Image 1 (cartoon, rainbow, N blue to C red):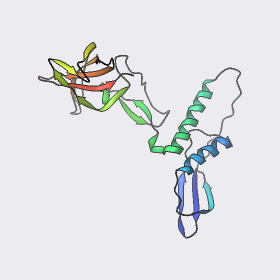
Image 2: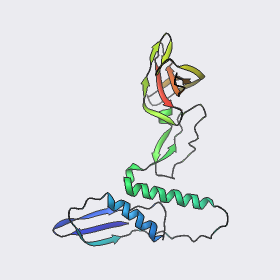
Image 3: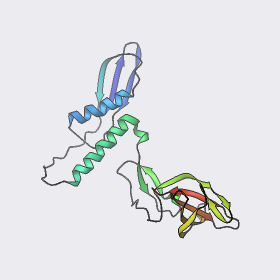
Image 4: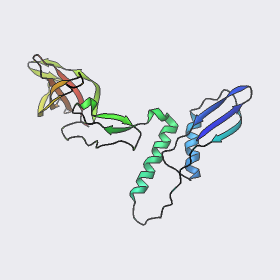
Length: 203
């Protein structure tokens, strides 16, 4: 849906309201529109409002169920996405899609929410929270340090990939614990004199 707000002596203010799924719920539409308007700065009072709509997808009818239905969960997720996008902007709300790549930093990509392809199941030895850029760790007395000396409790998981695109890596990953009992995902570069790096945190 595209809204056009006319102003006296000023250019029109235009914005779009994108819905994740078709709906006829007036209260929900009003809530989404209210969220979008709250972050819109108008140059002057609006004297007219026009609404344009492109393709109108058919809204499938649904039967009420006595037991919980997975379609109810999908509708709830779609409404949450719509409210977040109305409040934060379309570009601020993304989904994740799996990419067939062994390199952890390249194993996913941003996608439309709910439209990701592939499974995003992470192996138990890998954390969900990765640093955008791995952080070098100090090595003291042959031990990596992060807020103190780290104890290696699992690993190594060897990752060698990327030779085909010039961004090859050769790493041995470990699950480590620091003195504060935080679990970290670290790796050591496999080349001679390879350094330790912190790549992620376990929740």
